[in-house]
Image (cartoon, rainbow, N blue to C red; front, side, top):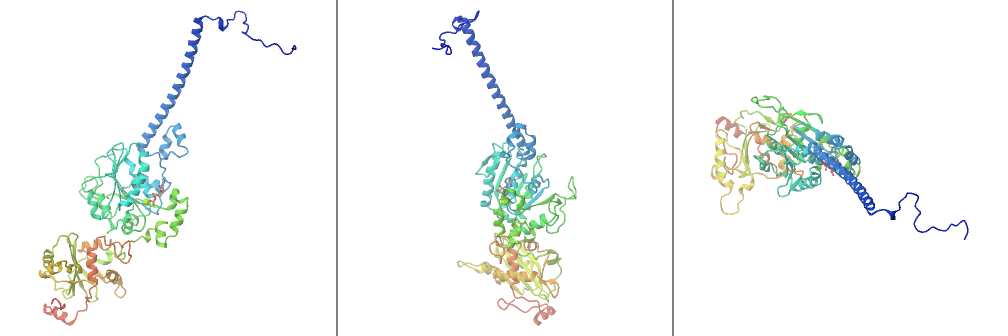
Length: 556
Ligand SMILES: Nc1ncnc2c1ncn2[C@@H]1O[C@H](COP(=O)(O)OP(=O)(O)O)[C@@H](O)[C@H]1O
Ligand SMILES: [Mg+2]
């Protein structure tokens, strides 16, 4: 043992003067010390709990605030984010929590558009369907908001519903989709019906209903403006805080391209609002002169917002989709990628021009040969057209009969009555199906004949008939006039012929699902070989006001 390694002291440390060791405190003192210790630890716990509560309160306030903002503006769009508290904004800064950020440019313009009717049209992939789903939420915080979103077929609709399921419950927590009714119910009480309308007549489903927002995705799938115009009558509300809107998206082309172009694109440069016009006459639609607030003033505004693929970074950046579109044939490519509406023409008879082909009625010379052509239908309309052929072989369609519900007998009576002052028909053709018999009973043609109105079966070659009609509508180079003109009184023919779409599957034919009764009758007429050169017999007939039978089969 050396000096440098002192012996380890063991046992209790020595107390200094006046100091009390632990072993020398009273029981009371010990208790006091323990109590003080407990109080200290409880205080610590309390402070900790308070801190936690504060932070929870903070979070809940933030969430409530965010929800309120979402209700008022719909969504956490950029502007709303600015109003959020710092803490929430910090969480949103990485953008992962923003539900929806409109793409700069057209998508933002579309969602902010105040016009009554807006078309968001153009390239596929431009973000149109997505924008429609978002725009529908404009007033979803208002209990009186009733939205209707349509597509043409159920299959197409399913796509939209799937997408809405991803977005709506996040935008409006508590929003419920009722599958049996295809309806969204929002917490405010607002509703949105997702549905499809295929044929024009299906639009009548909404008769008597009213909506505050009506949207059609892919409007170009509708061959005529009927559904769009019909639905406009369903747009109304008694709630003065809601503005009613119609919204549509469309790709150029499609069977409805021709009327969409006339309604939304031709009247004004893109993005410029304009007063809605009548697509046939081009005149501005006006309030009636007895309107209490705005007598004789323009009805409402329309606007066309063009979309290009490049506007949607969500698809455009990957480049793959664009590459796919680039591989399409020229016309399709220009329509889908560049959103070019000038190549959009789905109308079968795009050469039809009211100014050229429609004329005011005049008295037809008695000696012009006459043709009667008919397409028969009972539940769908029957159409009978009367034409006269002038001496240059031009057709003049001077009368039409267009109505459903005729039996052979009543149709015969109607035709007889209408022809009271006509000279006898030279040719009279009817849909060949009217001769078909499944049993022993009388066919339609037979009933017509028995009632004094005779027909022969029409030439039903669809392709040749369509080409013949094109030839008639074309300008005759010698005369500078078309080979066929229609009296303005033939309203159904004038209405349906220019709007008749091409078939989606066979470009040599029209869409037989469309309203083609007047077209069929006209086609039958074009396929007759009636010429206008009067032969001697006919000239005599004029002089004598009698006639000799032309058609030897029936003797008239
Ligand atoms: N603002 C947006 N935010 C997030 N995704 C978007 C946005 N706009 C479009 N998209 C996405 O881009 C894709 C194409 O958009 P879509 O609306 O289907 O185009 P379109 O109907 O014009 O063909 C979709 O997957 C859609 O979800
Ligand atoms: Mg789409």
